[in-house]
Image 1: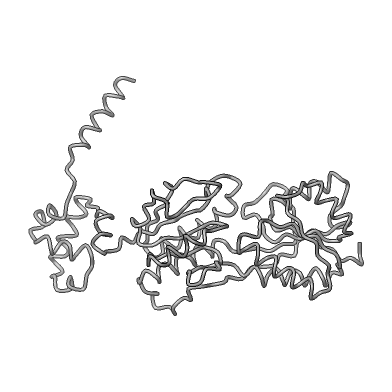
Image 2: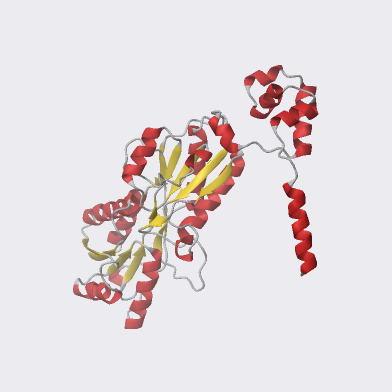
Length: 359
């Protein structure tokens, strides 16, 4: 044990005395001016005048010395780092939020690699009342060239202030703040289409269990569902599990004589399905269920709900592509992307929506 500690201490001392490699040192080793080194590193147009042999000599020295540019210094000099930030308004890694964040981060990582971008996750701002503040005094936002904002609900005033600052960013999810660039899902159209299927199956009374309507995604689902059900002649009652217990919701199903239970959140849908089974209610023989979302990770003995499926991996990739464009990196020969984009959701015909006439 003592020997191991001695080894670690010796390594620490050796690492501590290794001098930081600077552009001046690179220039000395390559036998060129510091300006030449700067031009090679930054890839500026003036660097085209540098002979290829000189450029390669500088690059060889950089590789041999493992030189790494100071990102803060590059930002102060008005230069980009190909460094993109990720800011989440809620914690991204608790298991209860992994269905939302995991596929998004998968798409973000894949697209960042494609565009040659590095990712920096901003975590220093504390979570207060369940949400971070991006403009908190401890924010290090300016270390990155631009940033992706992730979260179910975002502070409207912060979005406006960030927009006024000129800092490049893209919000993941549709936002109601004018001028904010975002990429989101077309929940309104998908929910309306799913409502049409409910109506076509003969249902005329429905109960909708939704999340807080403070988030644009929840409002879009509710508006699309309501419009679609009204067009199909279906009466709709609404409730939230945040305000009422599971038993209260199930009592409402009976008192409203609903033939279909529509649930926004897939986790709440599983909870309600289990409670229905405990009461002896068979889905869909006695009550149909439809979910306006789905879990992204496989579940043991998962319920095959009739549901909406949102391509979160594609959403993350599309957000990076839009930010890459905003940063002025070009579109690699592709057409310019709109700064507000809606991606389509798929409708999955599961086994929990039955026709009223056959039940």
